[in-house]
Image 1 (cartoon, rainbow, N blue to C red):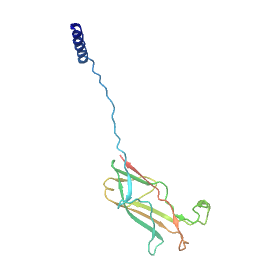
Image 2 (image 1 turned 90 degrees about the vertical axis):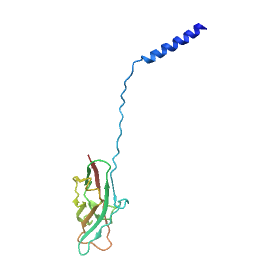
Image 3 (image 1 turned 60 degrees about the horizontal axis):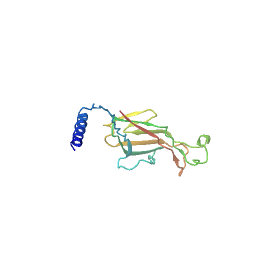
Length: 167
């Protein structure tokens, strides 16, 4: 019995001394977190900005619309905004039947202007600081109607905006 007790005590002493004298291991593990970019453009009332209908300016050949919008970012110092392609309003009569570039009689609006917060947009980036977009700003779209328009004609196009937060 003494041999068994001696064996148990010896095993306990040896195992505790080994644990006390084992070599420590330093391990560095890289930890990262990415903040997702949240860049939005909506109407100032929070609704989606999907459609704009231009209205004829009285006694002029200009059609215009102004929409109060809110641009929000969660990081960065501001936002760059540009047109992804030039705005073009053209007659919708052949929208799904012909290539509009091949129809010489296809009527188009001219002098398209798009501004945000009073800054004219183009195919080049226009910078807005975080302070400039803290409050809602106006998105204004204007275009001059063709010379030979008739009542009831419908014109359409797409406003392609590209927004990118700045660092």
